[in-house]
Amino acid sequence: MAKHKIYTMSFANVYPHYVKKAERKGRTKSEVDEIIRWLTGYTQEEIDEQLEKETNFETFIADAPEMNTSRHLIKGVIYGMRVEEIDEPTMQEIRYLDKLIDELAKGKAIEKILRQA
Figure 1 (cartoon, rainbow, N blue to C red):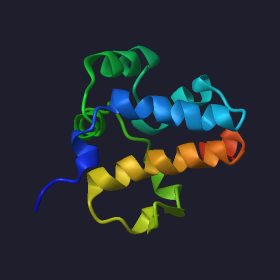
Figure 2 (tube, rainbow, N blue to C red; figure 1 turned 90 degrees about the vertical axis):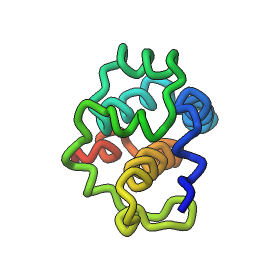
Figure 3 (tube, rainbow, N blue to C red; figure 1 turned 60 degrees about the vertical axis):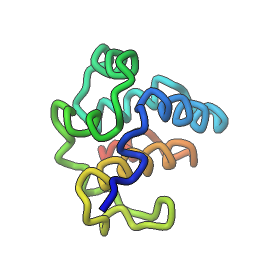
């Protein structure tokens, strides 16, 4: 079976869409970065490096320093799929990120997005 095209897409190509989606709803790039750091364990410098290298999404997820252990608390539908029911691990991690950015754009408090409250 062929890989989904999101795996081969450059994270640097998708990242501006995350930022634009957040900013259209009055949120900030720094909040997007905070979400990415929380989920993946990357530092800001490492995120910037991945963007500069144009790392593909599959590698971005696979090389993440430490996926957050609370990510299993992320629930809901994104792109017509329930994130908690996605079987393929890499796709689930990508959709977790999509879901968190969606929550940010919908005005959810950052503490709730990061499952802190």
